[in-house]
Amino acid sequence: MRCAYLTCGAAVVLCYLLASARPATAAEPLGSPLPANYRLLYEQNFTDASALNDFIFSDPAAWRVTQTEGRPGLELVQQSQYTPRVRSPFNIALIAGKRFGDFVLEAELVQTGREYGHRDMCLFFGAKDPANFYYVHLATAADEHAHNVFIVNDEPRIKIAKETTAGVNWGLGVWHKVRLERTLADGAIRVFFDDLAKPIMVATDTHFDYGLIGFGSFDDTGKVTHVRIWEPGLAAERTGFFK
Image (cartoon, rainbow, N blue to C red; front, side, top):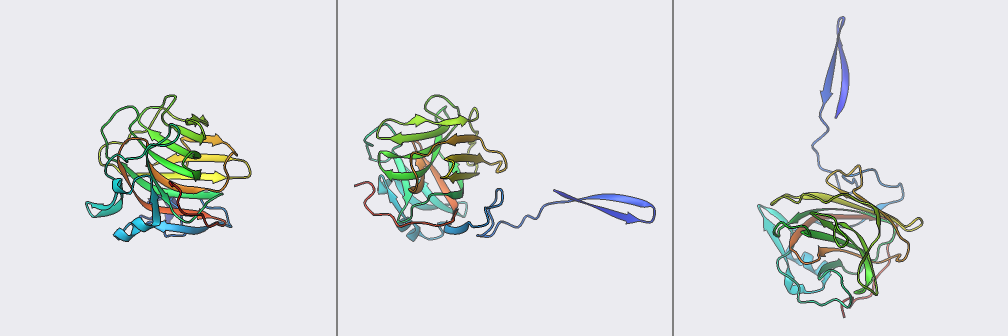
């Protein structure tokens, strides 16, 4: 909210001006400003079923492009028929053909499962292969295996966040804004949920550099839309990630 002072004779009137309701353009993030050298490298709003071609899946049969109340998105509609090599999420959709290092990711998520402590959705990044990646686990209640930043490094996932919260309130049919920031030089990882000014998770790790980015859930269902990723540069990735 902004304010302005107006004068009328001897009187001074303080007027509050509401921030513009205009949505951000492709070049404008919803959260804090981007570094000067960042540019938009990927955007997807899932307005067409062909958006599925942008992704590689742990189980393609578990995902659909759907519309809910006129809002399109990539939806995880069932549990994936997939067994990871080490204990880690089952339901994974990764943006194909692009590896990201330093980046800012913004998206909108809705959780469609039942309410319980580990009710979750995940953000994947730095993904090298099915047993080497990071993921953010956004869950109702934090514990040793929930609501944290995790690394999967050829062994079952390990939490690495040095700051986190008690959990998130997914609600029922509520869309939430998320933002994930990563910088390679200092290993910084910052996660934002709804309030895009203050992170709910902070971690530092430099084990993985460039890798794939994606979405999913450990063992629940949900939907993602309005995906945008900014970065200084990108590199091509080989296909066959889940082979």
